[in-house]
Image (cartoon, rainbow, N blue to C red):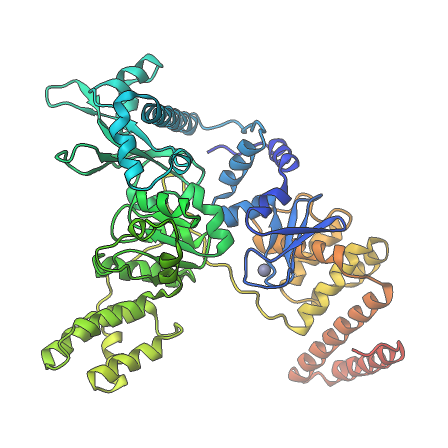
Length: 593
Ligand SMILES: [Zn+2]
């Protein structure tokens, strides 16, 4: 896809309200020109997350998450950079211009836009039909009997597909859509005698949307009891892929990021019932097992997922695949076992979510759950039975990984129950077959799924890194004095991360954020951090001098040990006396570190 022009990216950035965007994920309080809140990227009780509305930047003093408004949307909404630009442009009404585009790519983009439009207007048509047509009386009765109110049904755009064979077909053709487009969107299908007809007829329709709220397809429940299948979905196609989609994700995305938890259920009506009861972080997988792509999508939003589904019914292989992807992305999968014969919607019939949330809060991690299931139904009294348990738990524990928290405990638990040695269990885990690999794919057709790894935990800084960051931030805060220090610094003073920042600041000390190379994530994030620190930490020439001297001291020490190693005593002696003079000066400056 062709790139957006720099000018249009700037216009989007100017228009975007970073405080409003971040506020969807955490509550912000104004302090001076900036806003502060609890960090939406790590768990904390006291706010160390700062948002600068002028430059549209954010920075966390706890975990060092940082970036501009685009980066925030990329991270929190699981989008690629172009998607983040597009989504903000849409939201703030900015028209994007693209640099001249490859005609084929442009053609493809136009086509997708048309299919989305077709699906959107069909969703609207179904929705109107449900509320306005006398023929939808039975459908309205059905949803009401499920305890679903009009407000939540409208929020999710639930509708009804009428009975005739060609209502959508003819209506869409009249609006200028081709039969081929109706087929591609999964709204029409070919008849056996040639000719075409509507795919969805006499069914309650649930529009399935992507993270940005675009309709990809429909799930549709039969109204007459003898109609087959009970649930009919859009066919897999150019836009809709079941394994890459989570029902309700467009509405649940913000709440998931805010509560730092996703609740995964099986059906459309479970999602509606939960949202109606105020559990806004619920999504559905439209099946029994969560896929690696769905895990990846959620990993972009949170680090904890509770599976409120019949985990016993879901295939063990599928669970193991999901566990592998989750483990690799730093995501914890927990299982809230539903009472037999009840689904989440049943548990909310009395209008309260308490009983359901009790189960969610008591959810146990997926490996423990699977091990318990295997131990619970295994015939531990016989050798063959114990062997089968080992065969079953081996791949589960292997997918978990030996370094995972709780791994040793589970191995011991299995050994205890099988009355054998933990080392034997461990050997079985190591030799367990690898299940079909759960590759964390990039996700949907346009990379919707978000293939990024987990956010690295802020590394502990070395004393040198701490000093260089303090010094560089102060140089930005007081550029008139700072320039002198920037000129005196060279690579030998700095760590390997500090060096590119120094090179950048030599050229851009007055406007460090302007024109940062987007493909250099490390530089961008370090400069952002420095700029944010510059705004909130005091800077003085004395403090700058001290930090500089300490870096100089470190440089001399490095030089001395290198010279000694090389046997160059002349250099070593010279550097040692320089160091002594410097140490003296530091002491006399009256500041002790
Ligand atoms: Zn943080």
